[in-house]
Every structure is written in C-alpha cells, then in structure tokens.
Length: 133
Image (cartoon, rainbow, N blue to C red; front, top):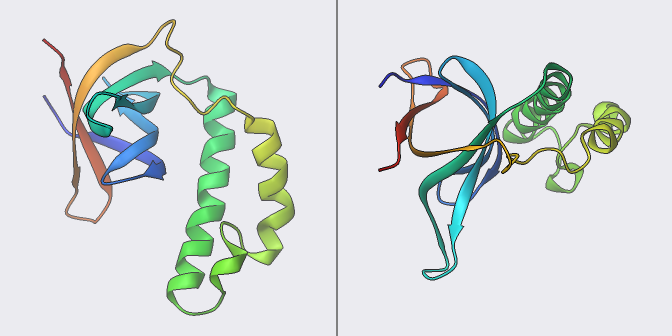
C-alpha cells in the first residue's frame, strides 16, 4: 500500500475520525467506526466517494478553519472565535448550511478499510489504507 493525501481532519479524538482523504487516488469521506462493545474508536473506517461540489464546500470550510488555527496559535484571536476568524464567520455559517449533514460516509456505497495515519516530511497528514480481512 502507499501513503495517500488527507485533505481534512474534521473530527479528531485520539486520531483522525472524520474528514476527506484519497482512497486509491480518489477523494473520499472517511468516517471512523465506533466499537460499542469497547466504547472506543479503532483503526477501521467507512470510506465513500465524495462528489465534487461537496468536496469543494468542505475544502473551503477547512481553509477557513486553517486560517483561524494559524491566528489562534499566534495569539491573534481568542478561543471563543472558533472555528472562524471574524471576517470569515459569515461564509463559514453559509458553508455549514450548504454542507448540512452530508459530511459522513455513505454506508450504502461505503467500503470498509483499516487505516494507518501518519505525517509526511512536509508536516501534512497522510494515510495508508488496508483491506479488512
């Protein structure tokens, strides 16, 4: 298997849980499987293709969050402005409505994969996908 690009990490709890990443070179939504018997997330994910329009909306909102994160780390904004800078707030709210509840793997067409996330030499999140036995 080869390392693939992670575009977004929209939810993180002890590792990436939800976002956009390439699977076989094609953008997909990845969503971690929650194990109800152990009450934990493991390393298995449902992955489903994302359409171009939704992909663009999620990436635009991710860029807004990245700008906020950079400003927050520099001490330029307070935590209560999360997840958007004041100048981006209106657009973020519009994107949130446009995205709605569609940022989730479509179980009807999803594949089931095991994932290993890592960090590339240029500090970007990457992922390696494996078939589940």
